[in-house]
Length: 197
Image 1: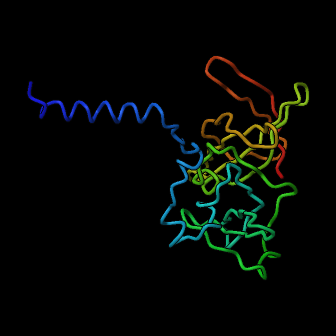
Image 2 (image 1 turned 45 degrees about the horizontal axis):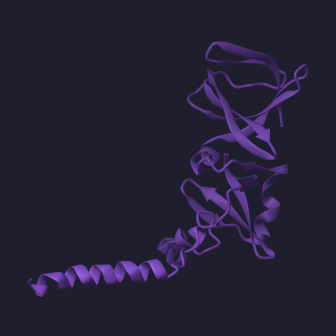
Image 3 (image 1 turned 180 degrees about the vertical axis):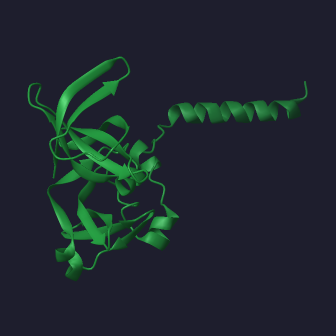
């Protein structure tokens, strides 16, 4: 019998027995997926809105420059609040001396983590739609498509977080007191009364 061919088999048996007797320490699953983001550490900084480890986006109001409204986002970093102006896909930290020039909501909006930044930038908060009989309420966000048409999307609030609900077909600009119906496939809900805030 040729013992030279048995060496690899014996070595594999040795490793197998060693692994059975040795208790393996598994890495915590949360730690395993903490991959350092190079852009966050070297370019943006760990307190940049794209790098914060939060599922809740805090939208506090708008900063108006000429006729354009830019969303304002607050992020808490330790004991400090950092306020950012959203400029398309970029975030500019707003100097504290300009904070009083912005327009703020009574209560900030928190968006569900599935809502992309592009929605917050492209759609401006326009008001609420309320059905007094069913006590249903939608937050209305819209953007101008052309000279006369607007596109509106509706959010519902659940546990203090805004979640996407419906979109309205292109229509003229909503005015305070307008009656609106919401269609969802085969169903129609309403009437809702629009209140501009």
